[in-house]
Amino acid sequence: MQSPKRAVVFAYHNVGVRCLRVLLARGAELGLEISLVVTHQDNPEENIWFDSVAAVAAEHGIPCIMPENPAAAEVAAAVREARPDFIFSFYYRHMLPLELLALAPLGAYNLHGSLLPKYRGRVPINWAVLKGERETGATLHEMAAKPDAGAILGQTSVPILPDDTAGQVFDKVTVASEQTLWAVLPGLLAGTAPRRPNDLALGSYYGGRKPEDGRIDWTQTAQQVYNLVRAVAPPYPGAFTDQGGSRFVIARARLAPDLPPVSNLQRGLQVSDNTLLGICGDGRAIVIQSLLQGNREVSPAEFASLVHP
Figure 1 (spheres, rainbow, N blue to C red):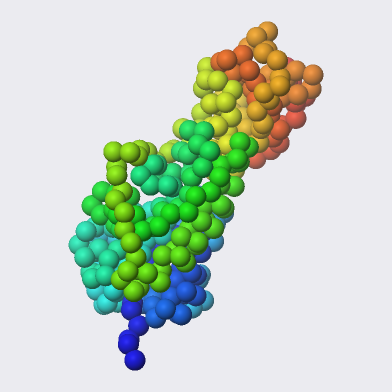
Figure 2 (cartoon, rainbow, N blue to C red):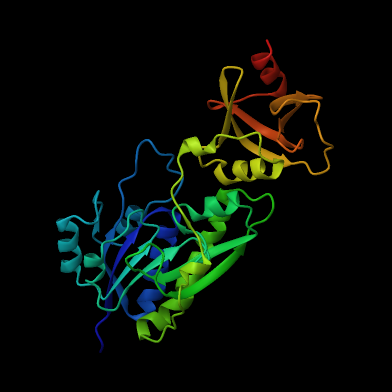
């Protein structure tokens, strides 16, 4: 009987959890065992709204380490001891050094949350929503020296509906990630999975985003402002504006295409007919359904009293 192939899995977040479970389920049928899981310590300053890879590893009795730096010598030693045929990376937050990838003779593969070569780099789902894309998806690809640059083994697309937030799109991409890995895994283990070039000239690369990038520029069009609100809505830090000496976060809003231009109102947050509006650079508005000051909901009347006492 042929001995099972072995995998080391670098993973985090919901995509990491679901793809790890796919390997455990589908891999068991196909002769794959996971000899080591590498994940991150949760950051106490971060909103941890997602599931735990470490908990899944513990549930299945898989050795698990949480190094700060995957390039550290002890990580390479642990991976070498695990004797992987494959290395997988599922939403692990660091680039893996080539010396580490070389420890897997049958290849190293990453699951990326976009339709490569579009939106290579960091937080691709947030960027796709911000840029007004109508679809995105999940891509399984070979890992290379450049991020998200290796040959593509499989992709699954998902729609981005006009009012979807990044969190809602992330849930769809998580399912697309499962589907992509599930479909590709048999051919990958058999050595027959087709590969197609990842033509970087046809794509785009984006860097990480900081909470400060959620600051609203009210000179932009209503569509642009609305895309920002959707792209960073909770569980992300949220789109914010400073007005009347206070900071306000727009947690939920809607675009109002049927609302006539409101050129008589100044740009920014305004109250009209007991409705909170965000007046934008094209004279159009977004209707604000949830406005926060700190963690507290602010009503239209309360906002008016705070800003115009």
